[in-house]
Image 1 (cartoon, rainbow, N blue to C red):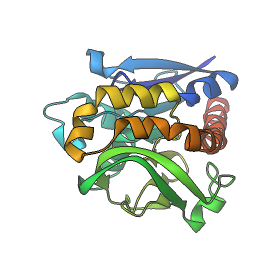
Image 2 (tube, rainbow, N blue to C red; image 1 turned 90 degrees about the horizontal axis):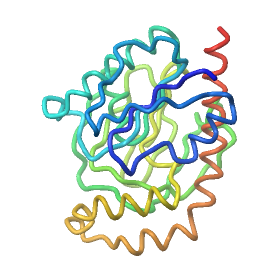
Image 3 (spheres, one colour; image 1 turned 60 degrees about the vertical axis):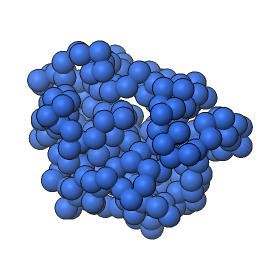
Image 4 (cartoon, helix red, strand yellow; image 1 turned 45 degrees about the vertical axis):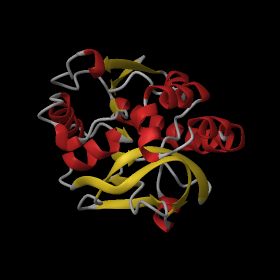
Length: 238
């Protein structure tokens, strides 16, 4: 099976539904647990793709979290080798920064269930073309990013102008969590309860809303990330 590097930056935030999708496509996730001190690989080597997952840190805290600089270096190498890159939440911010975009703190944190609208460009995008144009997204971020130069905006929310982007059809950033499972959401609510208290948000309600929103979110996520797996297979055969 072809290898996919997966940078996991917080215990609750794993591949979720993407993990099974990759395996179904003959792709083997190789986790690098940066939260446990594991070093980001210096080279893509035989890996045919790269996923950078979420975490509570910020891109501009790279002095405190050296793995962020290392992740940007690996993203740059993957793009030079024309290997697909996928960033989710913090990962999307790291990809944006690697492409030269500014990442800053938002006016307020966007946490919980909030609607996402796809742009017209998403209808022609290799990953998102089959997704619903409007969906309820699961969010957990305090930082936002500018659209990288040369990238295409794919989604937005009422609070956040850029929720997803594509760059050269090989790098993707998705700020919201279509990979989420019940377990991931429950563990995030528990692990990051200090943020919920600071923002005066109800973690029990976020968990309860899974019953109404999660199935549709995962359905859209499967459509998107199956297409990303296809990009990886194409890279492997190139």
